[in-house]
Image 1 (tube, one colour):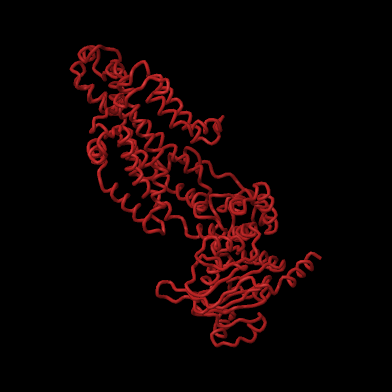
Image 2 (cartoon, rainbow over the protein chains, first blue to last red):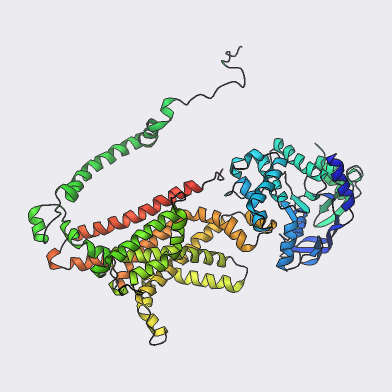
Amino acid sequence: MNEEATQERVTHTLGDIAIKIREMHKWYGQFHVLKDINLDVQNGERIVVCGPSGSGKSTMIRCINRLEEHQRGDIIVDGVELTNDLKNIEAVRREVGMVFQHFNLFPHLTVMENCTLAPIWVRKMPKAEAEETAMKYLERVKIPEQAHKYPGQLSGGQQQRVAIARSLCMNPKIMLFDEPTSALDPEMIKEVLDVMIELAREGMTMICVTHEMGFAKTVANRVIFMDEGQIIEQNEPEEFFNNPQNERTQLFLSQILQH
Amino acid sequence: MSTPEQKYAPGTHPDLPPPFASTGPIKWIRENLFSSPANVTMTFLAIYALYLILPGAFSWAFSDATFVAEDRNECRALNSGACWAFIAQRWQLFTFGFYPPDERWRVVLAFVLLILVVIALLWENCPARKPLLILACVFPFLATWLLLGGFGLEKVSTDQFGGFMLTIVIGVTGIALSLPIGILLALGRQSNLPIIKYACVAFIEFIRGVPLITLLFVASTMLSYFLPPGTNFNLLLRVLIMVTLFASAYMAEVIRGGLQAIPKGQTEAADAMGLKYWQSMRLIVLPQALKISIPGIVNTFIGLYKDTTLVIVIGLLDPLGIGQASLADTKWQGLSSEVYLFVAIFFFISCFAMARYSLYLERKLDTGYKR
């Protein structure tokens, strides 16, 4: 029943543009990393970005919350254009959560403090309320009992789930995942993917850079393939995996799906 | 081939205590004192050396020492060991310098307050911590008032400061100010704004590249040429500024090392959550960077504290200066061992306390993320 309700919300909000990227270019020094990126993401959409290493996937999603600066083109997130204006950048970052490959939890703070830090300092939420919210999300990622431990005492999978809970505590409209399972032991990948799948079911707008093709098939509305800084191909997962159009996509898929 | 039968079914093996000799003092002695033939030799050599040195040192310092005497000759006549009578007679001079005897209670009071404030700052579970922390905020002004006088207290000139009191005034001021200034310099050196960055680099490199003695000379003589005529800039104040700046430059480099050890992911995570620059520095980066830098920071503190003895070159009388002046007294000539040992013990106690506290702090702040 709960699921129906969220499904309804998804169809309701789908159609509004959450992220709009137009003719975006980026260089590292002389190196042209991102070339003419155009991408529209609708509210409630789940997008998986894949491609060989060095193809610019991470850089692209890091441009969306301005961890990387683009040099040409426009990025508009939730109606706010990313420019050098710090106010805009802060506004975008408040609404966009990010999960990193190496978790990037704050090792000197407990799990609970990790989760309440941004709500308290950025959203100016009272401490008790922030802790209540944190507990709610820690329960959702199934580790409420770890709340008073330090990140160093948890396993990789648990740390990544804390990182997801930490982002959710800010109640973001959009979640970015930068290879969230690449640093995990195989037996821990599933626990993280389960949390992400549940999040997708609830209608969160998500962009995931990942090589978990099973995940892509289960939750994505769209799969994007990047190579050498360009978006080569994008399609619904079924079409994308069964009937890739571009030669490079075919090569990439044949290589990662071999085993 | 048959495997021997297992005592416990798989998964039911209980946790057993470790064998006796692999824990406790026996293990420690075995590993640290008798782990190899070379180690055994060293242990016995060390015991022999202690046997040679300790009894002599003990009788010189205690059993053969003189504690009450009028001058050196009386000392020598009474006993063959150390002549502590000299220190006993002069300890007030060593402690307060030339501070007026009737006003010395103010120094003692300031010192007691300082101890309370330090305890409250360093010890998290200290009783009545809140009021003491409020005291800590007003302490600099309170101490200045107590030491210098005015507003109802008799005025005391800084020329009369001396001895351990002077060491503590310079040391504590330098320590308390050099850490925050050092942090700002270290952050400034990493700034994206070229003006701030190069100003910090220039400051750090200049101050580090010059011996402290030259800075003290500049403070004592040359500043009066630079400043408009008629400005009377207190010598002690100039020394405080120079010592603080000197330590800050070193501090900045120590902290920069700590800042560089913090993975970029930490600031990225803070940025991604919408924290502002100062928030992410204060809440995320600095707590970790300072923790890593504790050994270097305390090293700089100890260096600064001992460097206070250099003020002797510009005529301020710290304990060493008082000692040298006292040794010139014909009644007590030739007692330099006693004087220098006494001053050394004072410095050792202060510095060793800092070192121990830093070790305690490192252990306390360790949240197990080194694994």
